[in-house]
Length: 375
Image (cartoon, rainbow, N blue to C red; front, top):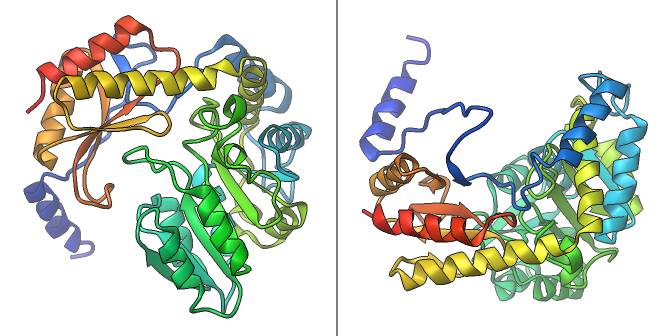
């Protein structure tokens, strides 16, 4: 029978407690949200919503085609200019998603004969980029610059190291300055995914590379998402103008994909300008994360110290994590639930978003619910 093997995989998932399903959410909810990636609480900000609506009224519901055909509007170009300036890079290129941006950066910058050195804790989009790249990939230990150095030392041709800046599972930060030093010593490029750093780290939320002094370097390329701190949709690659020009001509997820919808571009641009006027939002997200961690730890929970706005609380098992998240939801709190294969170390977790617009009372309530429902 066609696709008969799916039934066996489904049985295996169910036996392991790893079945996933979709849960459509309503437009409004009484749940306290610590599950989304809306780090700065901008997804429903009036200026961001109006930015989306105004763009849709002006440019229509869709981009109408590939960026190289009809999908590039003046709005896309404006967003790219302001995003590059804000983050401290020479140029930027906007994609339909952060996933597409990562695929583009890795595949286009790792040609045949090159070496890609990838952190073991990288996001799935970077991993898939490595799989699709024509260069050879070597996976090295998590957040280990010395392992990157050893890998680069074995290769004579073009090379690039690839890493998240903030890892999405535990919220720990990569040693960016040390990675950049190792790459420069070996003539390699550094590609980092700042999806969880933009809007939270760096001066006024300009990102982890900016905070590490790497912004604008000719050997550093940064990918970002517009769907987390900026509360919109889409992604972008930032870097030297010659690298961005190369992506326009070589990145398949740019050339053959429909451009980002104008509403998403308008929302992202409005959020970016709002962050520029209110840089304190970044510091607030970090302080909420620190307070969440301190309170969870004081309650006896196994919480990982956050470097940005992700707070991870370890669970005893996949089934325990699912039950814990469900019990939190029943008590009015939405939390993320990460299980294998989404976690590289096999440890299931609750994943909390330390949104910058959470009040002290909401933080206290969240910690109380998580503690009261622990397995």
